[in-house]
Image (tube, rainbow, N blue to C red):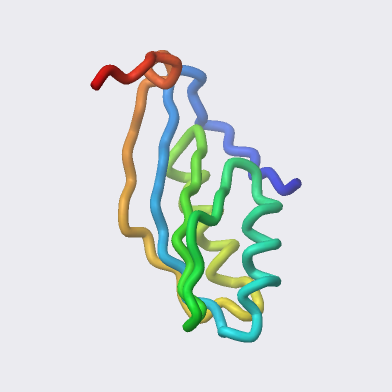
Length: 99
């Protein structure tokens, strides 16, 4: 599993980002496997044209950017775009959501 050490991370913060990855259609399986190997990364959907919907979680914006950069530079990736980012206090992540 890959990790990106980031010195400025704070234990009381957590970031969640949504990205869209456009992969070469013949390389989708390889790209999905690669992204799955990144700590706190998850592929939620893939499309027949090579589009992937991915979330990244990390303790800082810098770590999110580093993961995004790594994905963008992966062979077979045509592009990766940040479409959503949210900052959460770590304490709030353990709270149960009510309807």
